[in-house]
Length: 87
Length: 242
Image (tube, each protein chain N blue to C red):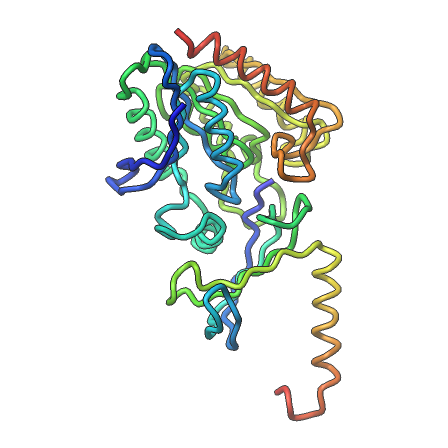
């Protein structure tokens, strides 16, 4: 189905899109049909800068299992950072 | 057949793009509005549009995400539309109305117009057929007609309450393994249409789930899709062809 299930957050960082690196301002996270991945539904993340237009986007489409593994890896990595570096 | 991008004056007077495919070898042809799925105005959806022209219908597919990202690639536009909250129902109806007017004005059109939509477009096909005078509507596994899925903050609201205004016969094509909509939901819709005396024909295919028509996705089910296409040709042949 088309879930429209969407979380939007503000972020700060950079991403590399079709036209090179740009500053990221937001991320849209949703679980729905992918454009490219061979799965019926995927956890999709669009890293964007709306001010630069709809093509300023770094997109990923992950299986649910992969997305959970990624989230865990991010938490594990951040958890291992020495105190004071990732405040 | 001829096919390519055209411009429509859509809802609110907005200029939007659309994909047109029409037969070159006949006149007196029926018309079909094609509604793409949530992933957007993509190549497989254009292929579906051309398929109608190959069967003797003029077909137009409005880019429902055009306003969210004019000139952007279909996947970027779909992402932008999602971030903006999806396609509003009133905008959809306005764009379909424009597409119908465009098709009926084509040289050789017989004045009959139908609609077909896939996935979110299935719900939108039903919606348009309740809001506009049409001759035939096809709903391919549209969810959230009878009820919105629980626990999801979606913007698609149930529209079964509009069924009394359904302007034309409805063909519904569903997968037995689909969860959105479930066979129970489509049976509920069928019962409501029967109660209201609305002509409809529903088929639910075994070994098929959501998006079984999508040839480029793992959900593709050739048997269900082939059967479904046959039902579509019969349905439109009866209601749209001269």
